[in-house]
Length: 403
Image (cartoon, rainbow, N blue to C red):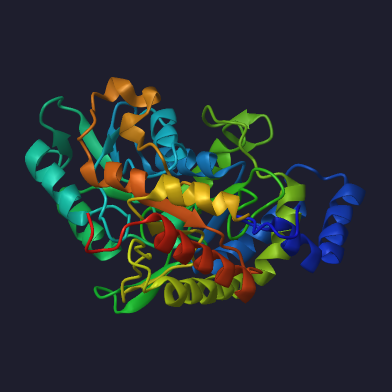
């Protein structure tokens, strides 16, 4: 890569930092020939459960597998409705449909980008009732059961789980966390009087270890976390063709195991995760200071009750496309997370939503821009990013008092 280019992410810097340990760990797997269900998998499951402060972590093939298995193991049934947000990667809703359920969207909060408790409550009050006999929440227009809520901890910041939890309890809904971008994120629960980590709040949670994540493998990998032993055992069967032991199948399952080489890589990298997350927070604080007085830029909000791990550092501007093009000319890579909300995707046209159904998500999709963010991002690189944004603001945008 051209040394003058500021990359969006820099996985190579991580690899160089621990190359000897990584090669040793991979070599151990090669010499053992235990490529599936080797000892490194169980070791990682123990380490990740400890990191998340939960009882169980079950390694699986991807974050999508993790969310699908979490939904099924928690009791989501064929034809159920599951509530999530349109402002996320499609894997969130794919996992819901692949579990046999129907995704239902509610809009997000404009300042945190995460599920709006207000919108969740409005949807349930307007469209659902609790059956007095079964205590199930029923979708009035269709008669379908609404069984779960999937809040997405987007960009590394947790949703307001106290508020979402109160609403879910009122309607008897399970909470399944999509924590695929939130390794180590936490929030202060006033109800419990303590800080809680992503992956410990609901019935179960899903994590992704896609290479670009805060904790990334060298391929596809994921995990389900839970405090429920029955859910943990069901996920173990689901990931391995429904087997309780070899060739004895309790249910139909999937081929969704975490392979041993990926587990070995994760065992090395997880030692660095707390430090990497701390560095990401420091980089975010530096961006906040550098960008605070640039008028067309809105920097991300971290509520007092949240501790983001800044998987992404996402700014907002009404001039997003122009700014992204300008930064590219300056040798600065950026990303869009995400440019088309799920309800506007062709894949979900059959759900019947239309443009205007979720105005906040639609507005954000036109304004969000992800800046370079990784632990080894330097002060000089951040200053160049900020200087370039300042130059763009000065040279290409009219003064604030000029229309």
